[in-house]
Length: 611
Image (tube, rainbow, N blue to C red; front, side, top):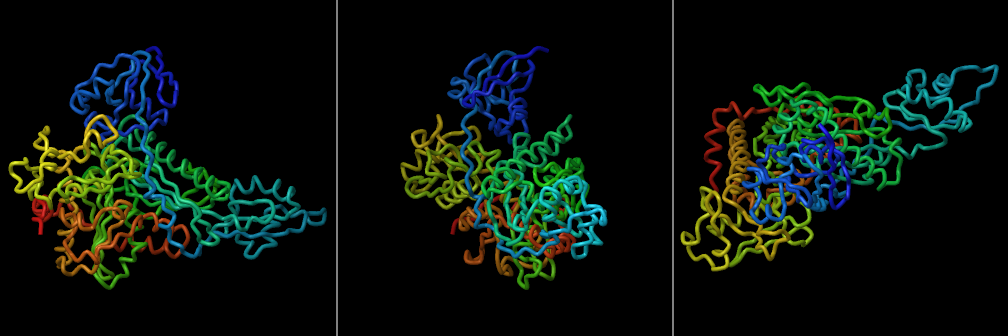
C-alpha cells in the first residue's frame, strides 16, 4: 500500500498516512477538527481545506459546493480527497467558540443534599494486641461502619494512606460504600461535574458538592460533528466498521477535554471528582455508552434503555476518580431524551397549574406541552438548520457569525465579536428570514422575490437580490463587509430549510394542542430553552411562525435548562427521583404516525402574513 506524508498548516503537524487514505478520515483520527455536517458524503460543502502543495483535482462535489474562485485558490472538500502523494494543506482557522454555553451564571445554586459524604477520622494505630485489619479498623471506629463496603481501588490505597498519615485520614463514601481514602483532612474537596451532551456542543459544569456552588463551566464542540450534524447521520455512521467505537471515543474525547479544563480552572485534582451526571438526547446517551443505536432510526424507534443508568467513571472512560458515580438521567422515548427530562426538572412543568409550552430548539426540536394534569412531549424532525448545517454559509455561534439582522432601507448586520462576517448562526438566520418576510422580500410561500415584484423597494436592497441556483438569493454581507473571499448570502434553498425546520416544530405544537383540546389562547407561557433559545429574537420567532403568536411578554427564554437539570440531579438525590418520575409521567407522542401531523406541517410551512 505504501506510505506518504501529510503536513497540516498552520500547526505544522506532520502525519504519516497510508496511500489511498481519505483526508477527512485522517484529520478526524488525528483530532484535527473539520466541519462535516453530512458525515463525509460530500453534500454539505463544510469541510473545506486549502491545498498548498500537491496535486488534487477537484471532484464533482467540489465543483458543486465550492466557488470557482475558491477552487482556483486550491480549496477542496476534505471528504473527497484521496491522499496518494505527499500533501501540504491548510485547515482554515477554526473560529473561536462563543461563550454562550459557558456562562457560569446559568447554574442552579442548589443546596447539595446527596448520598456522597466525606469524613475525617483519627484511628488508633494497630498494635500486637489489636491486629484487626485496616478496613475493619475503619468500620469499627466510624458511625454506621458495620454496614460499609469498600471499592477495590480504595482498598488498594488503604494500607499506604493509613501509615503515611499516621492513621489520620479522610474517607469518601457513597451509599455506605467507601470509594476513596486520602491522607489528612480533605473534607472540603468533594466535587462533581454535570454534563449536557449536545449533538453539536458538550457543556460541563464543575460544582462543589459541599456548598452546591458552581466553580467553573466549560464547553466544546462535540467531536462527533465530523461524522454528521444530526443523530440520523451518526446512527448511520455507527453501523459502519468501527463506527460505533469511533463515535464513543469522540464523545469521550470531548468530555475528558472538559474535565481537564474544569480542573485547571478551579485548581483541583480530578481524583476529587466523585460524581458525574449526564443529560443528552437518547442517541447521545447510547453513543456515550457504546450501545448500538441502530433501532432508534427504524420504526418503531425503540431505544435499548430508557431508565437511568449508573456506572463508575472507570467503566465510562471518564478522567475522574475511578470509582466516581456516573449517573445518566433517564430518557423518555427514542427521540425525547434525558435533556428533555432536564428541561422539566429546571422549569417544574410537571408541577404547573397553568398550561405551558416549552421548546428546546437545537439540532432536534423537543417540545413539551401541558401542566400537572397532563404533560405531553414530542420530537420534531427539525433538522440541523438552526445549528448552521445545510445552510450555505451556516455556522455555529462563533466569532464572525452574523447573529442579528435588521432591514431598513438597507441590510444592517451584527456579528459575534464584531468581526467581519464569515457566516451566519441560528439567531442571525432566524432574524434574516423574519426581517425579509416583514419587508416583503420573502413572500408567504417562502419565495425570495425579484426586485421588480417588490413594491417600494430601496435601490440598496434591490442590489442585494441576485440570481442564485434555485431562484434568487439575498446578500447579507457584501464581499467588502465579509471576512471571506465572497459575499455572505442567504439562498433560496436556505429559506426552504428554515421553512422545513420551523414548520416541523409548529406542526408538532398544533398536534399536541389538539391532543389536549386547547388553542394558543390557553397558553399561559411559552418557554424557549437551550442556548439558541436564549439568543433568538422573540418577535422574529413569531414572525416566521416558529412559535404561536401570543403576547411577547408571555414568551420567556431560560437558557440551558437541560444543563441545569443535570446540575440538579448531581446535587440532589430528591431531584434524581424527580427525574425518574418525570421520565415515566411524560406522555410521548410519535409524530411520524400521527394522522394530523402531515396536514399541520403543510400549513405550517408557509410564513404568516406580515401584520
